[in-house]
Length: 275
Ligand SMILES: [Ca+2]
Image (cartoon, rainbow, N blue to C red; front, side, top):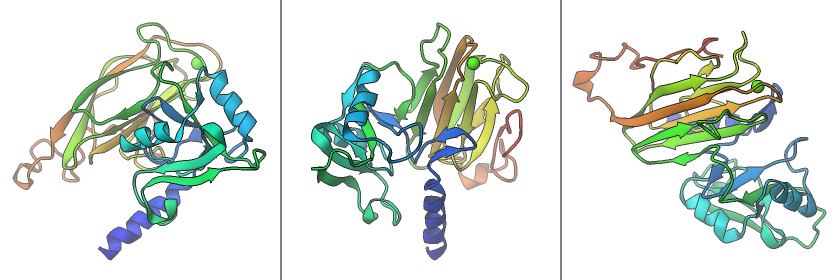
């Protein structure tokens, strides 16, 4: 138990590494979009947006600042972000699904800073846009097909999409690539899809993929997985369709049947191996 708490604390510390790392936007735990609600921070980093700027960020993308109720509805289906952001009417807060010592004061729910009198304070933003193009989300159903934004048309430049899969405890996630065509370059630096065997894009890196070769199936070790799709400013391609299905964890007696001794079946290391 103590070890478990220690491990959780470790994860939480790592999860604080939010924002830009190596020039790439990293997300906090869970995901960035659910129920039409998503989190935005300034390109210059965390807590840089005044109320007027936060409002402008959401409106630029065709949405508006989320209300407290919209943020709570998103939270109820797994939207968890450890960063305070502006909501409608000058309110500030953030959604906590999973209680942690370093975020949300160990509570779950909306951590509510209330309506701010000083609209020049700088926070992040929570936008609401139910009509936004499908680019990421939180999925809890037993099977689903993800498509790159705009599929079957080519995806667009400058996309950042996160798909977070969370199935029932005790189940695994089996990813199957149906179609795959992402701008190819030798280091997969331009456009890429990354897969993480965890609930964020900080831990459990499995692989980074680009090009038009269909990757092999991937099976998670636990009941959560994160997919991240980033595209740069030029050259697009056909995109992808990826299906996941849930699998029940094998009982102990079946161990070793389709698994390696480490219990990590079919685990790809991507083009670059584990980072
Ligand atoms: Ca590109």
